[in-house]
Amino acid sequence: MNENGRSRRVFTNFLYPFVLEAIIVFAILSASLLIEFNARDLLTEEILILVLKRTALLTLVYLIIFRIAKTGVLLFVGIVSSINKDYSSHKPSLLTYLTDIFITLLIIITTSPVRPILQKVNLVNGETVFDYAMVRFDAIPTMFILSIIGLPLIVGLARKYTGFYRIISVSSVIVAILLAGYINNKPNYDARIYETRANWITRDWVQQEQDAEKALQDAETNSEKAFSYYWLGVAANRQGRTQEAIDYQLKAVEADESYGPPHSSLAISYTLFGDFDAAKEHADRCITLSPGYAWCYYALAAYYDNTLQKDQAYINLKRAIELDPNAIDFQNTLEEFKLNNPNIVD
Image 1 (cartoon, one colour):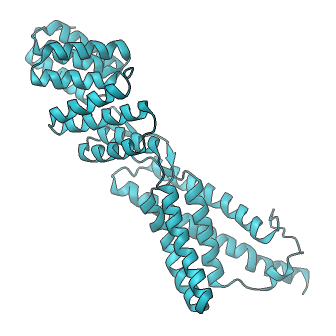
Image 2 (cartoon, one colour):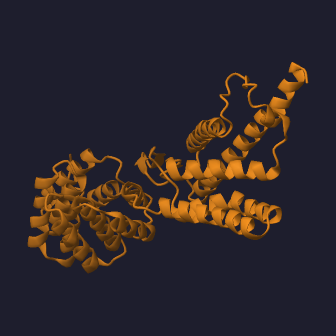
Image 3 (spheres, one colour):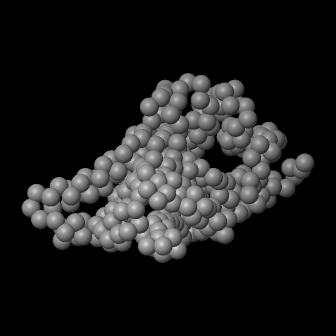
């Protein structure tokens, strides 16, 4: 075979499968992420670009590494070593394609943070802004994505092999899928707590409580437990379960006495119960521990408002807004306060 024919054979049997596999892996990863974003009503042009760039980069890097490892040939600027003549002489089968794609997906999903945190967002001028934090897929999405290729791979292996080899090959794929799910089901506290906070921003209190529960299960240190209890208390408070919210916040304080935010929630809860002494105590404690946390001043403003100290209520409410000008709760409370107290001016 002349050099031109050999080059065409190399392209057909090496580069073409590489390109095809890259497209399929890229499509599976991107589609799974974009479907999730769309379901959460967070699919924007910015997020679309981020997802496509991230998955394209991971796909190319991992496939190149896998190809090099598999063939022992360094592919660079379309030049393939002529040592591997066997590979360039035989056309890979569909089963080979499926196996390569499955292995590539398996490696990417279990080793790389490919999934952006969907709800790690902030509100700026009333608009949801996406923040960039990357984590691995959770267990169920991991197994679902791998099953897209895993199921036809299992069928192909079952048809090709018989007896003992069939059992081993099919079992290997199933075990790989389950093992990947197990690996990605290990604690991912940061991901859980990001989503918990973001659920609060998007005002999905039920989902926030569920994510906070998961964060608590993943928490290892006392500070992580305190943070998780805090968000559980916030979710309970927002759903009208005030006593339960107090119980959660007291657990947060017990877990980490230096953590200030639980005291703001306690102050608001005690204000609702009419226990103003306790409310003032916790609001002051919040400011002492976390002087830059806006909700400390919001809680103190609520105390002053309910004890008819309107000037002090207004001062602290304005301080809260200065620290967090994009908080919808603060803005709404300020408008209501001005409406009910027209004599209060800047």
